[in-house]
Length: 398
Ligand SMILES: Nc1nc2c(c(=O)[nH]1)N[C@H]1C(S)=C(S)[C@@H](COP(=O)(O)O)O[C@H]1N2
Ligand SMILES: [Mo]
Image (cartoon, rainbow, N blue to C red; front, side, top):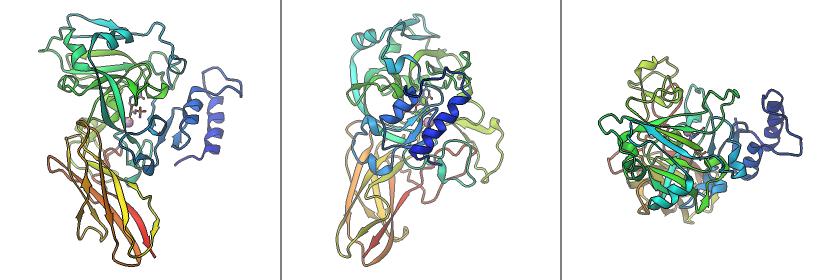
């Protein structure tokens, strides 16, 4: 369900009654209200924690502006973030390293070469609303994805200075400063990990800026991970610790049904033994149609410009094709090269539909491994991850 703004505000009031956190005067907005106030165009799924997606037509740019980028929070934004309070903050990097170190933000900014890249961040649950039966979790439609320009340092450069015990390093786990919804300070809102090899792949970053500005409070100020091509949940926000582990990370966010897919296909609605699940790593090939919006009208004989974005965790997009006859025939769109690896690629094509009537326009992307988006919603899974089915829009020709 997508809340309208009025019911969201009522929801906030109702939620506030049961909270351990101190009650605020009505005039003083909570950090969560401030976040949503700064993102008036997003569709709110949940207000506390903030979970809000971007209407797909607002993803039309090469870069997603901060006020349009989706937000996916498991817990509550740390108190220091909206205040921009760095007091006592550092990033500890430890575990199977000979030189465990706590870095200040200034050290990271000054002691390592900084770099900037456009990177797609997509929630593994994006598209969950398409699964039948519906699964547990936020029913994201198309907009739990964005492509911002991130600035920071390569995680590889930082790890290089710590003398990591290479024979022991298996996973790099993050711990964030966000607070668990239960209010229990001993519990983490979300802690996940990536394979050590991914951490040092020369793309995974520690980022402090988003589209040229310090990270917004809701996007992880002062420092977050950006793990290109992996589920958004790998890109830990509000970092306070990276833990190089000699085993696979065993947090709640890595086990059970969380961010994991069945090893073998399962019938819709079927039960899966958590032992038969594996952690999602590389994200699949996907595209969106960002212009026009579904339901658009056009006069017969008039060309209509169709455009969108395409990306894949496996590498470059090599083709985007369009069909307006239910997949019988396909027409190639023009595809732009990405500015850097793991950025989304813009595609566009003017089309003239054959005559009056109702059309469905489909878009499908193919990546450099030959992987292509499925025409229908792919295999059902217990938490509704990785729905990368082709998007369709309706067009009425008059
Ligand atoms: N500390 C922390 N990091 C986090 C999360 C979180 O709840 N806590 N959510 C993750 C998930 S599931 C996603 S999809 C992305 C969303 O990033 P965004 O809110 O900047 O779009 O952040 C990830 N990093
Ligand atoms: Mo996510």
